[in-house]
Image (cartoon, rainbow, N blue to C red; front, side, top):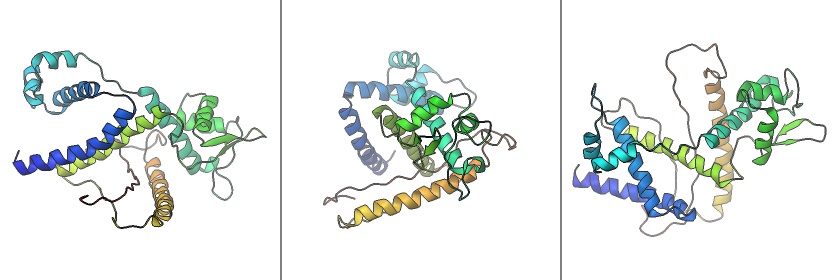
Length: 275
């Protein structure tokens, strides 16, 4: 690695760590705990992603790659990852239900908007919606989750009404932190793909930003960007849903892949020296 590359990478790591460390400190995660997590990830990535073709990855090679001792590598190799399967599954199920409610004709009104649905029924009901997009989850449990985050409500006549266009974890810190792990990892993985010298084709990665905006412009831009971004995401959701074998079992093709597009908004005061 050249000194120029090292300097650029070190600067990038400092920038991406700054908001992460704020979150860690706010939630009582010490430097010692962070280093233990970082060491585990170093060992896991070196073991899985840096193998020599047709050769089993050895403890010695992982130690050389990571700079850890063989003893540390062996210890960390015996530790399981701390995947938050519960939050991930809850997020995915709820998001699929809302997307299907907005998209599928069976659950729309005459104007093409998500219709208030009766709780029970073979077709056109909330239970039918949950069965189609959330598998074997009880409809009441899914409704409780959607009500918890303010995405749906049960009307006086018993029907269920959708009041949000997307699943957003508004209530618990745990759910919000789960999104940190998934969404940020996707962004960094995209950047990793684009900076690799052996990549075949770059992945889409763009942003638009200006650094001399008055305070008064921000509320309008927040609203404009949210509306435009939501419209785009709903359009892409419809395209993907027609090709996803969970929602369309008749779709044919090889392999199983995850693909999507993420959009985020940012703003902060400008300080002299910012790049």
